[in-house]
Each structure stands twice: as C-alpha cells, then as structure tokens.
Amino acid sequence: MDNSLPVSDEKASMQLKDISWWFLGLVLIFVWAIYIFLTKENYQEAFNFIKIGIQITIKTSLIAYVFALMLGLLAGLGRISKNLFFNNLSRLYVELIRGIPMLVLIFFIALVGVPMLVDGINALGVWLTTIGLASIGETLSGFGNKAFTMNGRAIFALSITYGAFLAEIFRAGIQSIGRGQMEAGRSLGMSYGQTMRHIILPQAVRNVLPALGNDFVAMVKDSSLVSVLAVRDITQVSRLYAGSTFRFREAYVTVSIMYLTITVVLSLLVQVMERRLRKHD
Image (cartoon, rainbow, N blue to C red; front, side, top):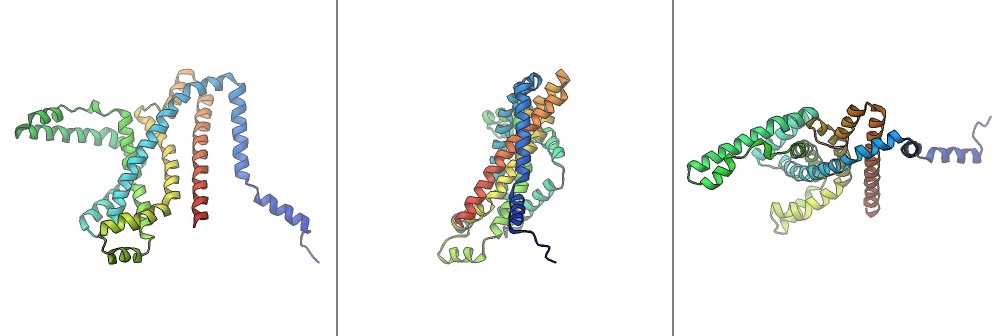
C-alpha cells in the first residue's frame, strides 16, 4: 500500500515548511504594537515619555562598543602572543571578566574601580608636585570623582566587560587563518607586526564580522543594565514613568517593543552582511 503523499500535497507541505513562521510572529507583534500606540492614549503618552531615552541607549552602546573593540583586539592579540607576560595578563583579564556576572561588574567598575582610578591619579599628582612639576601635579591631585559622570562610568563598564568577550572572538578569528599565511609574510621580509597588520588581521576581521555584529546586538540589550547607575536610558526612563504614573503595563510594554524593534533591525542588518560575505566567498 502506497502511503506517499500526492505531488501537489507534498509541494504544499514543503511550502509551509519554507515559511518563516518566527518572522510572521514578529510581524503580528509589531502590528499589534502599532495598533495600540495609535488607538490608546495611555500608550501614546508612555511612548512620548520613554522615547527620550533612545538617544542615550544608542549613544552609550555605540561608544562603549568602539572602546570594547579596541580593548578586545589588544587582548585577543595578547592571547596568542608568545610573550608570557602579555599572554597571561590577557588571559587573566578574560577569565576575570567572564567569571563575574555583568551586573556585578557594572557596579564594581562604576562604584569601586573608578574611585580607585581617581585615587591613583591624585597620588600621581602629588608625586609630580614633589618632583617640581607643580602645574601638572596640582591639576591631577585636584581630580575628583565628579569628573566621571554616571554615563561615562556606564560606558567604561560596558567597554571593559565586552572587551573580554570580543577578545575571544578576535583570538578565534586570528587562529582560523592558516599558519602558512604568517610564514609567507615573514619569507617576504615582513616583520611579525607587519604580517599581522597587513595579512592576518584583515582576513581574521572579515571572518568574525558576523560574530562582532551579533555581539553589538547583545550589547544594546545589555545596555539596559546601566539603568542601575541612574543613567537615563529607555529602561531607566520607563522605570521613572511607571513609578510616577503606576502604569506598569504601558511602561514595560512600550520599552519591550522599543528594544525588540532595535534588536530586530540590527539582527536583520547582520544577516544581510553575512549573506553578502557568503556571496563574495
């Protein structure tokens, strides 16, 4: 007895499998969100209040990610370095950051690390004053904690935290390039640094671009944690709105839709970049 489906039914089944049902679900969520924002005054009020924090969220994420990229690249190079000091220092940094919850790190870096840094700057200023560099020394010794705003501390914390994760991405990208590439560069008379800069790194960065893009999306979401430092991003602004109006549903539905919109757009851009890279390959 033949239990196979007719050709037409089989094609219809394949077409159903090819439909991106998850994307259809997102579309329905966005349609529902647009409907309530257009028809319900409470949601319109919440959106108009909370949207003020979008600029801080994007600005904080972008600046922190740029610094995290630089720190991650240095740590990634340190992870593959044959220099024992830099190799172990980079590994210590990566293991410390990856072994502590991000929220705890944000508190520690912003409220403990930055004051310790200020104390070090003040001590340096006192020392410079004692050796005769009074003008520079007085400036540094008068440096206070207020010079670092909470927004600046949040950026500093996110940069250090994500630098450790990006370091592993860069390390994996560099190690994915065949050793023959380095040997070829050295045989042409190039130094280790020149070979790394002109041959290895361009290929490694291209290989890890999708992963770097995904980490930026993750940073945008994790930037919500800086609200614990009273940084007025969309999470903090939504908390203020909910606390002052007691409209918790409107506040947190609005902020959830905002984050979902930002991350979906960024994720689609990352997918476009991946397809272009595969097409080029």
